[in-house]
Image (cartoon, rainbow, N blue to C red; front, side, top):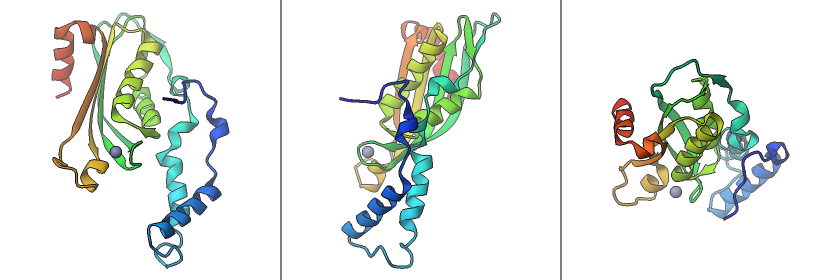
Length: 197
Ligand code: ZN
């Protein structure tokens, strides 16, 4: 399956607001409504505008957003938890959203704590699936920091399940990605899972 690789120059992919407005207007007609009625007349504009935020992750390379520092001997687990995210499911273009929990054990490098939510924001503001989002976050931290291990857990609600009336529609989906000590050492993994409870 083709995907956009890291490091792509996204500046060429800027959204064409006018084109999107036209397409949304057409879509409204196709689903059987009147795009010129009062409540809908400005909707294409609003939708196009909202896409700048919802799909704003295409504009940036997460690796360039993240500042890495030298570690001054800290060798315990670092955890960022309850990071809110909103993303769009690539199968239905409906939102899925929830919390991200990230843990890592540093080696020589650490990352500014505020940068983890920024990375999550960046990867989630695209057409995504939860499994890939989880792995992209873990892989990016591994790549940038070469830590002793990374753990990422995502809990999310998918509107495509709820709104389309799929059975067990209130269930939350949990995904996880573990590398290094988080994968090989059960104690490390349990410590992380306990700390994010
Ligand atoms: Zn879906």
